Length: 79
Picture 1 (cartoon, rainbow, N blue to C red):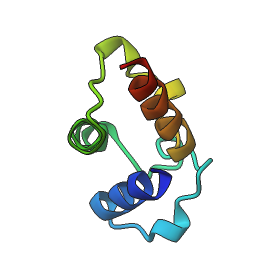
Picture 2 (picture 1 turned 180 degrees about the vertical axis):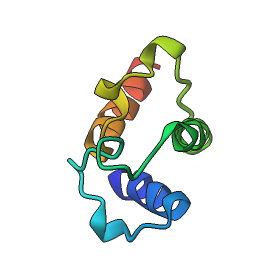
Picture 3 (picture 1 turned 45 degrees about the vertical axis):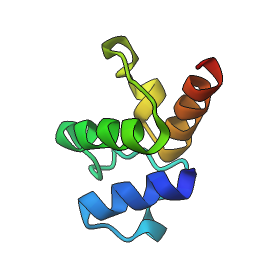
């Protein structure tokens, strides 16, 4: 799952996937912005069937590949 997320982020930001580590702070390091987040939410919905609520749009859930994967795991277990 982390590789799928990393590859998606790399693809839409024109970065090498090897540059984006699990713990890389994708917003703090300027890899991702709010427009990228919208694309990511659509990707997570289509790829993992995860619906993101407005209240879940926090750095805690989307700050890194590791956090995004954990968020998806929590959402799929809860469903």
